[in-house]
Image (cartoon, rainbow, N blue to C red):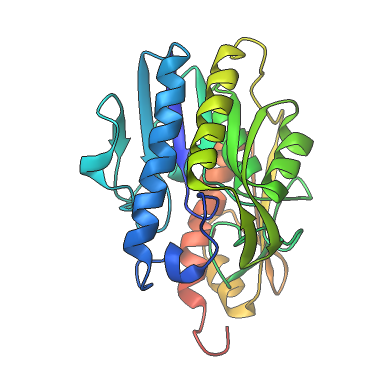
Length: 278
């Protein structure tokens, strides 16, 4: 049994501040330790439940967050963020199930800790076939394209609600309860790790009953930017089309084709964002 772990940062145990989550922050090294411990708790739960292989994708910011020498030696890890065509689910194909560790709620639809989608202030909202989505649904749908189900997520209570609503009866490890975007009531570190490990173990034991999240037929992905300049620059991607001065869209015959198109729009569009005016 091969298990895939997406490791993000905003939903990591105890983490509430951008000063922790970003490489320029003064508490980033502390964050790296916390992220590594959460991921190791998930790895331990997966192997305890019968996994034979675990692959971790460090998928937060630079993708150089997890402390390599502290990672559970039974797992392998994808490090570095350049040219991951599947981004947060790079090399997910061929796995029996996926775990989303340290994920977060989508931007603007709750008071979830560090709620955002893909990028920071550049993004107002992302939609899939007209419905607002976050990294949870996008990456679950990409994994589902390869017939890989998302078994479990860890993060705050807002993420857990979104996961139950979008993905159905999967396992959710709640490690903190959001008060606002930068404040939360957090479980102790010991209890957080117990929660992650236990929910991973339960999820892996349920692997045969949890179905992949799939989108049938054509898929339209769109980004509503906060900046018209970002949208205009993104519109240079062949096949993309503007639905308004702030909304860029791309339609594919399936989820993978739509993702590759909107990923190009995202990568190009953010270069048009002005740090002062947006």
